Amino acid sequence: MKLIDGNTIAKSIIEDLTIKVSRIKKGKPCVAFIRVGKDPASISYVRKKQKTAEAIGIDSELTILPEDISQDALFSKIDILNKDDRINGILIQAPLPDHIDETATFNRVSPDKDVDGFHTLNIGKLCQEDPSGFVACTPAGIVELIRHSKIDTEGKHVVVLGRSQIVGKPSALLMIRKELPGNATVTICHSRTQNLHKITQQADILIAAIGKAHFVTKAMITKGVSIIDVGINRIPDASKKSGFRLVGDVDFEEVSPFCEHITPVPGGVGPMTVAMLMQNTLNAFLKKHSIKM
Ligand code: GUN
View 1 (tube, protein in one colour):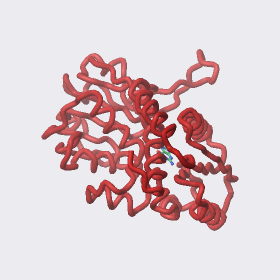
View 2: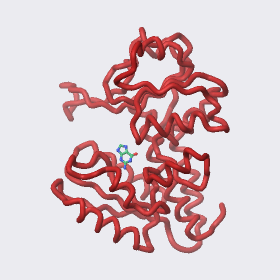
View 3: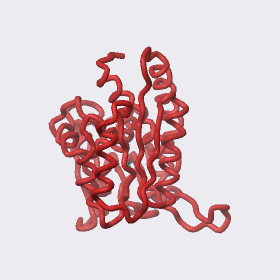
């Protein structure tokens, strides 16, 4: 079993980005975060993204909006950031409160500043394999983990567990691209899938993105599978100061001895999401200033 060390892979990408940012002669990339409400996970993710930006030399700013913000007021804030010449990337941390239309909100962001890759135009470009668009950070991070780990995807069966807009669907689109890592045969499974274990047992590569702790068990896999565990689930743990610990969608202890490769949680996909966001922000800046690196 080979453990895929997302921390180390993300670190090397961040080092590369730090060098590139230091070579910029005029100006600095800048990413703007919007956080709505007080979700503890969102607070922690945005803090991590800001700290990483700072370490690279990318500027960031954070707008915190109240949980009961109106859709119109949220749109007005996005419009201001869209028009602000200093801002290269805009990220609205999900999940948003129930009264906010998430898709409409993501589509309010200028496609040129959509470093999250959630705008309809960028999803369309991903479908068309047009490299001028932004790819969502977690799926892009999954691809980089697979590339760095030299996991062969050509003609292989990739099973994606979960059909979310943020992870499941774009990951499947990346895996069927006519380039490597890609060229895979992809099956997307979800909550209505029948005989799920029969399908997951056929996976050469399993991407688990359903948000259910310890969902993938030994009975669902075949020896030699490579697993990318996207889940970040908080489960109670009295021995921790915080009162919880993070686990993935995979029962790591039970499943990992039978895997060719597997990502840990934490320390697998999570750090890659942040690294890809930084890469998208730098790319937005370079494109705006017509700089080639
Ligand atoms: N919430 C969970 N993952 C993400 C992400 O990649 N981007 C944003 N904006 N929100 C998220």
